Length: 94
Image (cartoon, rainbow, N blue to C red; front, side):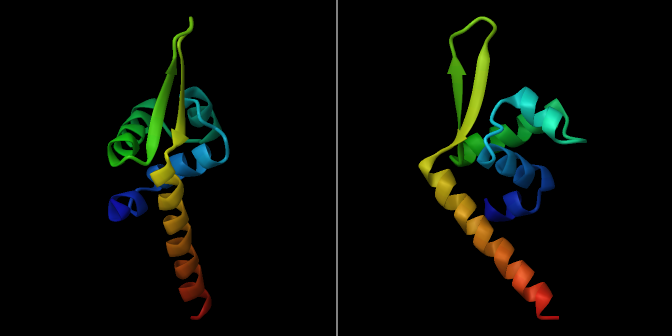
């Protein structure tokens, strides 16, 4: 799961957006140049299957969907931050 997430720039970008409070699909695609709806839906689906993100569908017209980190997702992104900091540390030591 970590390898799949770290190996995909869009997965990391989707997590960054959700953490920044951009949690609606349309807002995510507008906020990120090059991110298509198809790729976004695939990445969100992966994150839901991993238990990192949950989908909240509101029974409204028009329908409204939001995504948020689960408790596990909060801990998971903390681990990703540590890995990212290790990479920065490694690069700075060169």
